[in-house]
Image (cartoon, rainbow, N blue to C red; front, top):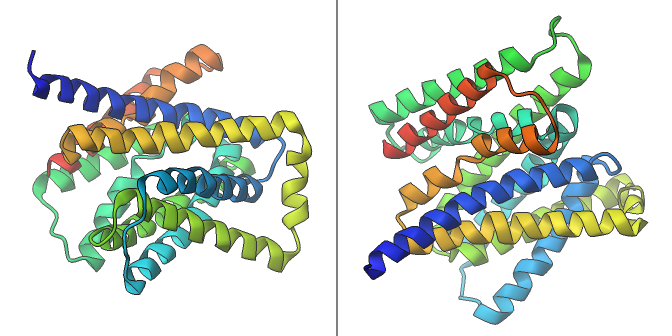
Length: 297
């Protein structure tokens, strides 16, 4: 068999494992969320992520970077990590990992819309159709998962936090795209995490809540759980996505990495014993099909 064939196998496998890692990581963070606040989880995630990636960068080395690029990536980290991820964790606590990840297809849809406005990128017909499919799939999932009277406070708060997380992440991605034109992906991610971490430390210090946020992690069991969760997300989700990009095209890699909503359904069914309806399966498949069309466009 040819070297190209093995490269395709390695790249596709890494991308799918990355998507599965994000699904498992969300389940682990949800368990942490039973004892720690979303801001506390995000602070520890960003700070430990900086240490993990910093150790890797010490091995591979740093490349020179201009101040404007550093600033753009930093603001991207503040929006996408300090703000976006905090609302994501809050949604995770309110809605659970299954529904939160099934809302994930909104991120590429909003990202494309923001790119069209601020980066002047034109949308193709396939991208418009893909956006429609993704929004339709998310709507199906929301309709099926919503409480009957649609007024449950926790559900409404979770949906709001999910939407705010989507906006923060999408804005962060658009800025990161600008910064990545002049920075390596690994180094850019480290800078985004660093700024996100600094932003969260400043937030906690200004509000006087740092000690309250960190107190739950005096529990060794909880500390081990979140350190493991962060390792899964950083080296499973992020690192494997980079491995896939090394061996296969960016389009194929992104499509495969975006299948997380499909993986969360069997994981929720077999590990959490949650019931999965046909409507949720149909909505998830429709949303992921939308992502495929978007990246094909």
